[in-house]
Image: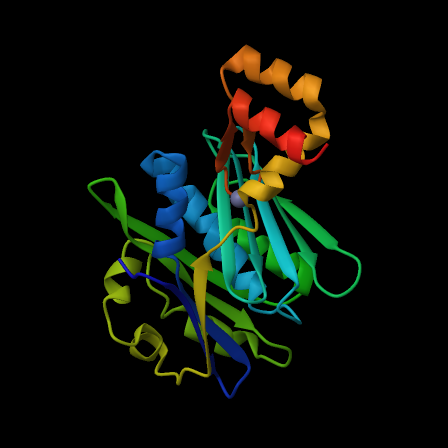
Length: 267
Ligand SMILES: [Zn+2]
């Protein structure tokens, strides 16, 4: 497993086709461990996080971000910003077939949202369908992951995107070189997989890290917003008051003493 996630991009076909490789094992493993996910859910979440990180690489500035959700029997979500910070959460485990794949870009201006249905249950086909509908350009993606003793050994994907002016036959010819889902992890062992596959030079690289904006301080503000009586009533009911971060699923727990202390400090 790689310790830090990475995105590398090269241009092919006279600069008209972008090939992007993403290694997301490290952020996907953090998400899997934090939420104690089954391999099935961890795989799906890794794919959602990989696609989200891909879209974040086109954001106009570092503060912009994209959110991707897959909602059906399972509920998965990921958020990535223009700096390479990535977070993912599985809110509910289950099947992915017929789920809705929705992407929102918060990128200088009003948020833009688009959605497609995951008809065949593959995140990679939903990505292509979404991309071709929203950008009116061809795209392909191969997403894959492998586990060893329940932990990620590798996770990530390769994306091909036709840029404006790309010829369809050139795109299709390059797309024939894409590996299968099963071959992807073996390819990651190469020193430079993009060069190995397509012979392209790396023009852009970025590190990707699991990072959530949540903190105990922010969770404490949520407790305060409940009001002292309600916060204590909830704590009595459950033994401890838990605030769950909607983005990464981390639980912040508050005992009766901690709740009393919060309200004492914040009057
Ligand atoms: Zn969080």
